[in-house]
Image (cartoon, rainbow, N blue to C red; front, side, top):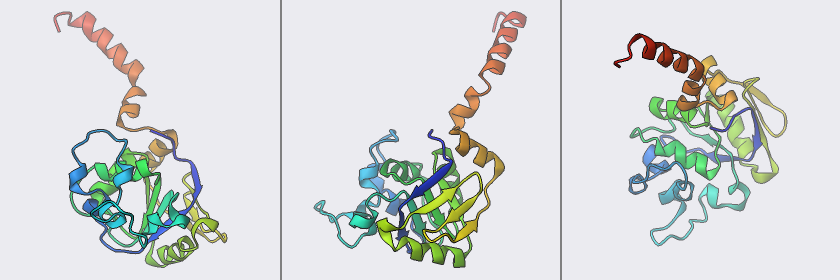
Length: 201
């Protein structure tokens, strides 16, 4: 998993509330168990017509936000079914951070496990960030995980809370497998001792 330290990038404004996981990645794309390749189908029913043509009005189809790395969203982002494909699709598209007033619990947890930082901020702060995001590619937002701040393109900064363990994992690029591998010497030592004391195992 890639480390998340400081991200300065384009933020896409998505003021809709209750953006659920089926909107993020529709059910017909859940057949794969690969984490890559889902970005092309991110927000598929919002981005494309039934015959595969781009819908010009959708924010990620507009030139100013095609390379967005941050989403500023309405309340209750990631609600609906508990599909891990949703953060996979966001990450594969290039989204590393989502900012909202609230998230669905399972989606929130899945983000951290896949290298995406979900940030919860008060409604008034999200409203300011949403307006900054509407400026498009000429305005870059900065997310600093170490300092736990989000800064607008004109220098207005907001502090956010993040669990210390999850912060450690993101800063160091540690998913569940990476955390286990940190203990590999202790695991090897245990297995060696076990082999000597219980050779029949």
